[in-house]
Image (cartoon, rainbow, N blue to C red; front, side, top):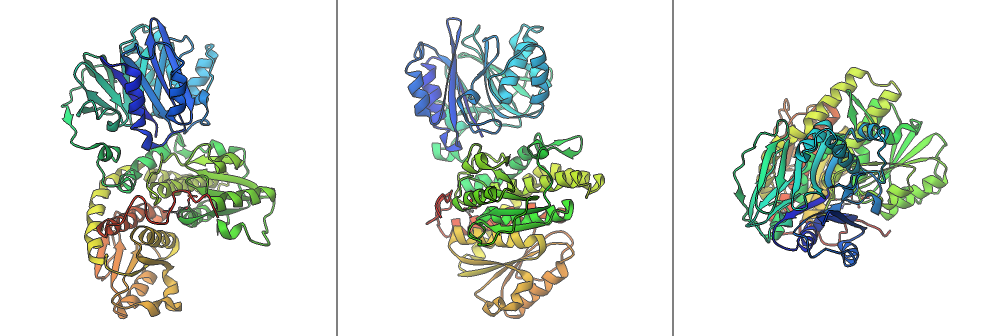
Length: 607
Ligand code: AGP
C-alpha cells in the first residue's frame, strides 16, 4: 500500500509533506518522492530507499522552503521494480502535471497503447504515468483541469487514490478515490489530503472520509468535494478523530494483526483486480510458461500451509499432480527426482526466507521452471524466480502472517483456474461459478468478520487457560487445522497440534482428557461424517470440543461456532479468519505481545 500526502496552506509545504510521509512509514515502502510547483516550474524529486535519501536530494533542490503547496508519496511496488524511474510523482509528457497514486489501474496497458499511438512516451512501467498522461490528453479537448481529470478517471478502471497538481496553478491540488483510501484533513488556513490519518494528525483532527467516485479540489483556504459522475457537489459531515498517533497507524484497531485480519476482504478484492476479465482468469506472468507435468510447492510455515491447501485445487481443477514440501527438507534432500517438465513454485510472503530461497536455487540448478509467489516486489525470491506472481496484499506488519495466507490462497485458486482453462480440464461453467463466488467473497467476509470476532472473543475467554490444544481437519481443511495450531502456538504460547482428523486413533488420542481441548473443523462436505466420528471419539474420552461448522452441520459439542457457508474448497476463506481471530483473542486475553511474539522474526533470513 502506498502512502500519499498533499498539503496546501501557510507553512513551508515540503517539510510538512516529508514529516507526513514519515508518519506513514509503518506501511512499508521502497521509494519516495515529492512535487511542488513554483514560478511556472514543476519540481519533482524522487529517490529509492528510505526518506533520508529523498531528503538528501531535496537539500540540493531550489525553492523547497518557499512553496506552501506540495504533495508526496511513498511507494510499495505492485507494478514495476522498486527503482527511481518507477517512483512517484509521475509527470505528463508536456511537463505540466504531476501525480501520485495508490492502487491499480486494471486497463492501463490498453490506455498506454492508445497514448503511445498518439506519440506519448513513457519512462516508467507504472500505471500512474499512464493515468497522468491520459489527463494531459483529455486536457487538449477539456481545458478545465477538473473536467479533464474527471474524464480520464471515468476511462480508467480499477482502484485508485490519486493526488494531482498543475504547474500553472501552484496552490491547487486535485484528488480522487476509487476503492483505495483517501482522507481529507481540514485545518485553519490549510488543508490536507492523505492515504491515512497519521499523515496530518499533528495539524488537525477534523477529517472527511472521501467516498468512492468522489473528486476533490483543494487550496489553502477551501475545498470542494464533487461526484465524479457529474461533478455535482457531494455533501459530507466532518468527523473529529480521537485517536493518538499509534492508534491512527492501526486505523483504530488494537493491533496490526487485527487490522490485517480485517483487511482480508480488501486483499481478495485487490488480488482479483486486473486478473479476471470477461469471466476468466488472466495470469500474464504465466503465459510464457508451460503448464507443468508435476508441480512441487516449496515453502515454510504459514506459506507451506497455503501450499498444502492449494494442492487440492490444483489437482482437482487443473489435474496437475502436486507435491508440497517444507523448504528446509527439500533443500537437503539427497535425491531430488525433478524432471525437465516439472515446475517448482516457491511461496513466500517476504520473499527473503532463507530455506525457501535455497530451495529455489536448487530447483534452478536442476533446470526446472521456477515460479515465485511473493508479496514483496523486488525481493530476492521475486528476482531469482523465472516468473513471479505478486499477492498484492500490501505490507504485513504483524509478525504472525494472516492476510498474506489469504492472498496466497487466492492466487493458488486463480492458478488452478488458469491452468484448468489451458488444459481444458475444467468446464467454463465450473470456472465461472468459482469466479462468481470469489468476486462475492470480499463482501461476504466483510459482513461476517465482526460477528466472527465477537464469537472468537467469547470462546477465547473460555479456553485460554488450556495448556494444550488439538486442531483437527480433513481434506482441504487439514492445512487450515495446521495453520490454526501454528497461530495459537506462535501468538499465545499454548502448545497446539494440527492433525489430520483420521490420524487421531493412530496414537494422539491417548493425550485427550478434560484439560486437552480440540478445535474441530466440521464443514458441510463429503468428509463431514468422518470428521463427526473423530469428534465423538474425542468427546468419549472427556475431551472438550469447539466445533467450527457452517450451514447444514448439526453436531453436539461443548461449543459450536457457525461461520458463513462457502462452496467446496472456498469454504477455507471463512475458516481462516476464524482460526486467526481465536488465536488473536486468546493471545491478547493472556496479555501476550500479539504483533511481536517472543522469539519470532517477520522474515527468517537465516537457516
Ligand atoms: C507465520 O505466522 C509465521 N510467522 C511463519 O511461519 C512464516 O509464515 C514463515 O516464516 C514463512 O515466511 P515467508 O512467507 O515470508 O517465507
